[in-house]
Image 1 (spheres, rainbow, N blue to C red):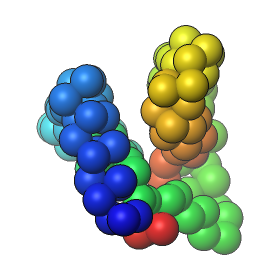
Image 2: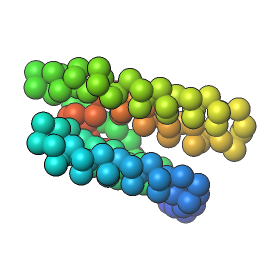
Image 3: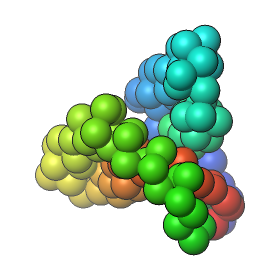
Image 4: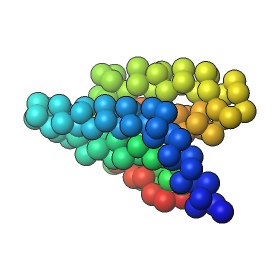
Length: 126
């Protein structure tokens, strides 16, 4: 029952905009990798892309803070993370208005947290 619900929610998520979000994160990963300066952030954006395609049944695990990931996340927040998180928080506010939108709002809340500090975060099955 749980697996069926996750599958249905992921299909709804993907068809109603998850494919756009995942594809844009994947495009961002390619652009970051091509610029060489953005290469340290490319693996994190690829992980976010996979999470954006099908977030239901997955959770984000934050490992212990290492100095390199702390510095990379700080730069990320300043350059891109804050407005990406703001975008997801606006979607949270819009989706949380309806009962049907609450599960989708919850996933956008997880994406907002992940887009603030993506380096070093792992995405695992819940």
